[in-house]
Length: 305
Ligand SMILES: NC(=O)c1ccc[n+]([C@@H]2O[C@H](COP(=O)([O-])OP(=O)(O)OC[C@H]3O[C@@H](n4cnc5c(N)ncnc54)[C@H](O)[C@@H]3O)[C@@H](O)[C@H]2O)c1
Image (cartoon, rainbow, N blue to C red; front, side, top):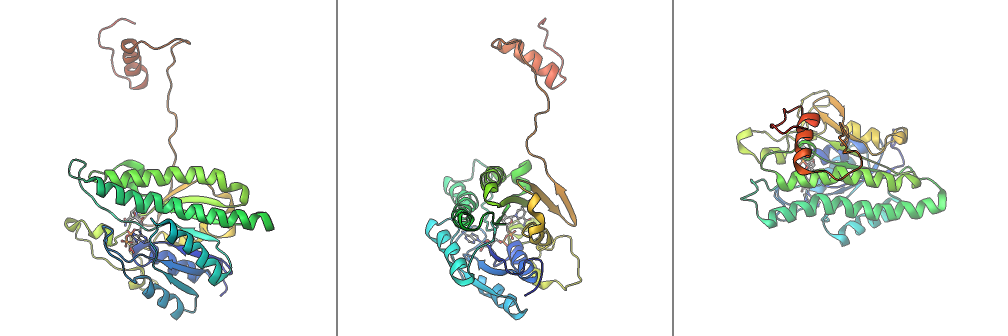
């Protein structure tokens, strides 16, 4: 197939539904061969299924090349096997889109340790594991041919970047993914690999899991080619396809948020202001006065400085 990603091999996790399904279809549209991974479970991470098959069939029916993978991104064995399969079936791996996700929303006093652990396992461990095995592959290729334009595109969320009520597990996981992106982007640059992160917003099974929102789930392929819906799960897929291309080599360690047709360049934690104590240890009361006055513009509580 011709196109911006012709000759490249992509692996998209959680590509059976929602946003990942949109990515897989978009990457294939631009010529990439795609490993369509999906464990096929429920929104809260129960069960397994063959949900990847429908996406593989769609890609093939449109003239593309794809294979299904039913592995669990939280499993060391399965993620290593995903990289091996890409290499055995298509010769190499160029693009990893870490997208698989689940939610188990509850306020922190009702959330169970199991809710916390499973969400961390899928999002954080899953993103790290696949990045780890892909990095090994790119390091080996780079030793033979020099720099390789490998790509990792991770998925964070507004909950991770700004917090969200009822999502202490998910928000922690998504903040960790944004942080992981920064470190991976530093470590893999020497092989030619870039690591970036998107923060999408879409109507999917995940958003429909809050019944009060009344979300109607439509998959990316349910929309007509010329139809624009602000909450179409594939609205962020063109950005993923472009980040995966050779042209985007100069973008590394970035977080880009896509809401409707807006692409927002996000900024990491930045230092806003500083107070110092003239080279000596702080006294707690004096510190409180100066923090209030100089960092927050709050009036002193009566103590004289
Ligand atoms: N929908 C939104 O508004 C939104 C906002 C911000 C971030 N996200 C993130 O986007 C990603 C995709 O979510 P979505 O909204 O499309 O939900 P979705 O439920 O439609 O898709 C998630 C897919 O991941 C798969 N999956 C779950 N656990 C897996 C595992 N262990 N291994 C492999 N596959 C697994 C599921 O089977 C499912 O097909 C997630 O990381 C989510 O956190 C979504």
